Image 1 (tube, helix red, strand yellow):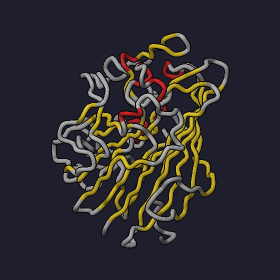
Image 2: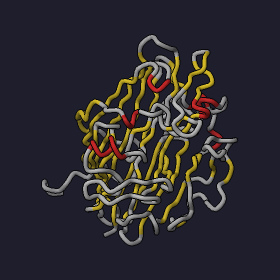
Image 3: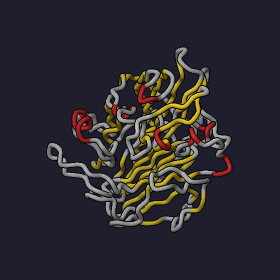
Image 4: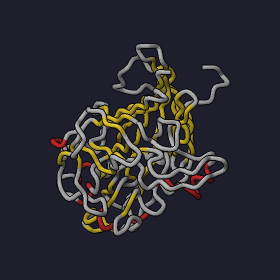
Length: 349
């Protein structure tokens, strides 16, 4: 890559946002040219680091932590969504600070070249958006390249999350962090024509508000590891898929030592762009972007429904209020919450 070539990945202090993910000359993530645009127009959470708790918390209430209940902001009907009105994706983080060259443990596909890494950090005080305890969070982004068997360059981004409970406010809190990038491999206004494969067809059935009503069941119309095509309107998916239902009650609070598992593969036959999403997490929300509605911003065309799809590796939805899942998200003093995500993008062109 020549010195004049743009960096394949760019990040912002606001929300530790992934602003750019280039494959060739195509930015495959939705976003805006400036940080100020995210402050004014980012209702869809483009590229944000989501916390303290990603996805939804039933009735905007943590039923029991530290022997008491906690009221959260009801910013999604009666439920809490993505950390509240001003969750971590709407906060300005410290960074990016260079932290040298790192490898990505368990990464297959050949040697990682580069590995330059930066860290963003955030301190979230006790009571922030209703959540108990003061925590310190960090996101490390590690960028590098690999080569495919045919010699094509793969742009690789590793993400590592770590959260610790600090201070003497409480003995425990709840954490579930993810990245909320919207991917578009088509180079066109919508994701139509994208071929997708999910690692599992087990998902959490939900009520009208998006809260699970029970344990994993098969998702009708989706088979594990079998490709399907995203059309103009269908399939319309916004659900939490589970990698291995048998591990629901044994997921550690720090999954970083777990093997990377391929969650989703995507490919667009016109651009010949590939995307792989891997993670150490037990579940992932797959969302086909039905509710995206962003106006034109400084020459960037408006984005509407299905202008991107999300893969959000995470713990189970509303785990903090479900006894069998609660251990996935409860962070106690002296422990570390941790998880890893890896994105791999390349083109056959």
